Every structure is written in structure tokens, then in C-alpha cells.
Length: 161
Image (cartoon, rainbow, N blue to C red; front, top):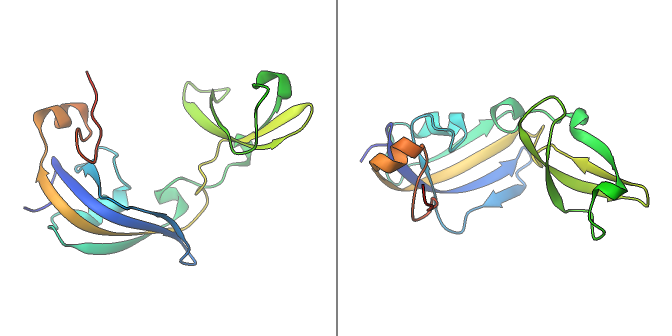
């Protein structure tokens, strides 16, 4: 079966930086709904369109094609009193941008007696990335998956609506 709009594609992938350092790698295939639903990077989706099981490709992407440029404005210094007593570097907290309803996940990068520094940038923001993958399965999407615009069940996720 060819990969086309409203098919569920399963693949193994390896994400690396511009120097070849592996940033992420799958142990089991991940699945996404093909056809512009936002489940995978658009350039990868373009490269996989009309391909079949067993197809492998490698797609190089600039920051604007992935997680965007690093934005220094997403680094915030917050009062220590706004956080739990056990706050530590590496913890994540959700917060809103001051001028938006969007939720941002902030990572704690430093803790002092008076303040906590958090960074709302994605860890790979500003990086040129390479996405190498191999297609392991292709199937028609269910009506529920198309309606909800994401994969349900094995390798996707299940939930109640």
C-alpha cells in the first residue's frame, strides 16, 4: 500500500544534529496520520508521500522546518516563591506566554535562593536536524482517526472521546 492522505504510517527513525550526534532514536516504530495533520515534520511527510513499506529516507531540516530558532525571550526569571520547595534544575512546568493563550513547557535551568530561571525553548530549537527513517507499516486510517486527526491504538495513542 502506498502512503497517501489518510493512511497511518509506522516508521523507525533516528534524529541527529548537523554533526551527526544522535538526539533521538526509536526502539519501536512510531505511527502518524499522513496528510497534513501535523503528526510529523512537513518535510518528512513530503518525502514519504506515495512511498511504500521498506522505503528509507534521510531529510535535512533547518530550524524553521522543525522547532524554530532559539528565542531568548522565552528565558524567564521568576520568583522562587512561585515554585514548589523541591524545584530543581531539569524539572518542567507548564506556563503561558504573557501575550498569548498558548501553553509553553518551561524547563528549569537554574535555581537560586531568590529566583528560578526557566527556558521555554524546545531543546532542539535553533538546530539543523537530520531525520532518517524507514517505513515499517502502512494502513488505511479509520474514520475515528481521520475525524480526530491522529492515530489511535498501537503505536499511536488510545483515549476516550
